[in-house]
Length: 311
Image 1 (cartoon, rainbow, N blue to C red):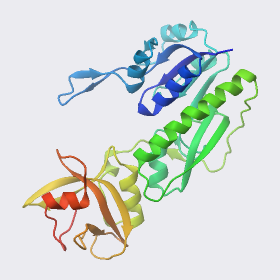
Image 2 (image 1 turned 30 degrees about the vertical axis):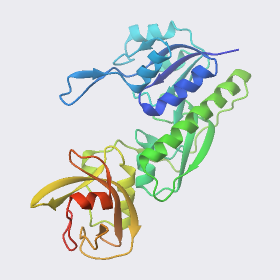
Image 3 (image 1 turned 30 degrees about the horizontal axis):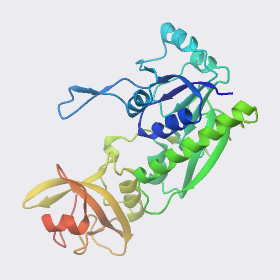
Image 4 (image 1 turned 135 degrees about the vertical axis):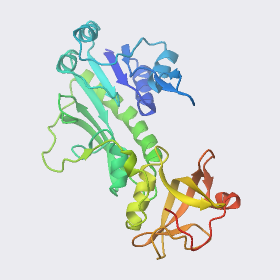
């Protein structure tokens, strides 16, 4: 019979799983998401999360507490008498009383091959590190940081030029499908959880602003991986002199290329840029206040001469 589910998630990544749980016929008794955040050019407009917008479209009740640490919030959660909490990129800590409240516990969809890349930014860190595969893990949550036992795993290849945005979308779809499989097995009592290995543990810390500026003195592979790991947001960037003025450029796509020169040097008319060792070719970039453009399109509106250097 259908499960009584509390769904907990916030960003776009979580939406396909929320939709899949609803379409599978489970009773979603409440949707928890982070509170609306300031948005708009002046930051004066409060914007609900993607999960809240989808929950409202589905006619589901929404709660957006700032924290779940208080006794009142924990009592409200327990009063839902849920069989299970499904958690996908919620972004708030679940205290022990919340984890223990649902009859079947809380299960989480995490975008890595645990125990590799526990933490906040597993997609970006996997690409930045040059990993050739990652995946989705469905785990039973405990009070540690992504340390719970794992029930289901599906591997996903990371193509050499894949961006974080592309990997995000692929993993989001896998998460939705894998979560429905997990719920079916939970209903049948056939989902077994296995403790994570103590070997191979890595942590995917949040992306810091200091990491987003390209360091052209690094090897080409590192530069390429940083560009694609941060695309489309927050975006890797550099500065270039255009029309006698220094401009900030957001770098969205690149490829490894042949070439050598001073770090940051423009090697040809195709935006091949020298790195500490090797070179990258910029495929897609964006001027401040402009829209993303392919390299040929960009060069029609901005002159970047061979021999000049990006910084």
